[in-house]
Image (cartoon, rainbow, N blue to C red; front, top):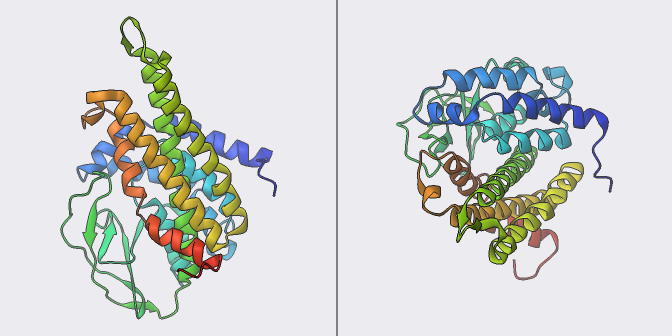
Length: 315
């Protein structure tokens, strides 16, 4: 299996990284977490113009055709820069919606969508223009949303949605779930890589007993373990993007999310007390790593998918 990026993919990710690096995303996240969506929507428009959401839509719906590898690369960048908003949910909506005009509005960035899946809560229902509910009877719209509920990640604003008008009785749920899990895995991987980079930089500057903390053997071992877990997850995410096999995607999600979560714990430990403060930027990545761990499928659900595919008799 070939996992080497081609020139077009490298150029795309390079341009996206450059754009996000200049976007001051920590400030955007903090505004978003307080319900101020102006800067977040402006960034959303720039992501749409860069073609991020077009990667999840067929050409006849205004997209580039579903391109899972490029989607995974884009979401790694979004995770690395901790971009807020219902990013994964918009990808899922682009697959679920049966109406070309609605999908075209998602692709252009004109419409921001969220989806309630597996329960009454949806991400950023207060910011979304289009609210969707996956219920046993099919895919429904929701005309409004309930109050914003607190979340471990302040930028993931949860609201309840009530099913309204029925859009379709047979939404392509399996395909939407595959892309949602894949992009969640890629986003988590990006979060983990950012946490690792920030922690390595910090321990090189922080000193104890007159020497950098990063020179201590125990610290080196912790960081090496984090890097190994993340680098092991990276090819699984890219391979899952190539195969789109449910077991491969589930394995990629659980591996990437667990690696990011473990890296978050290491980052918190090595930063010490400052890592607990909400004012310190590190917290934006720490809380994201924890929240993504269970989004669109818990570790247990993903492991069950892998075991069932392998024919494990105990599942």
